[in-house]
Image (cartoon, rainbow, N blue to C red; front, side, top):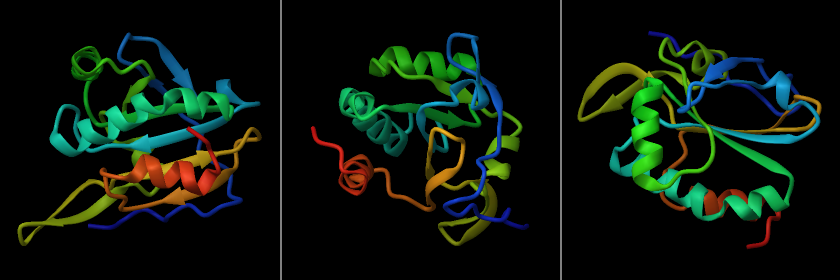
Length: 159
């Protein structure tokens, strides 16, 4: 089991095209000219992922005011992301990465340990990508609770 190389600020963000919860294609290159916050979450509708997604939902206006587009991405199928979005009132794209190829390209897929077992899985991670498509921030192994508040502080975003 190997973890992909982690991205560093200044590197070009790997481009991707993924399907959102409504069946639309979203590509990073299509968002050039704006800052993007891409966060990877392990599984829709689980407690930590729900906390994190709802925090983004509640602060979405602050990110938008700062010119930042928020995208969530998980290994879940679009239908599962759609049910999650509808249940929690999520109004930003939840992208499907079922083969975890995008997560791998961002270094967000790799070895994890849980209850003494080692396995491969999604590493909760967040990336801020500048308008030219370069990594501005790369945060790995983030905690679901308090993460959005931390990002807002680090990015200087007012509520």
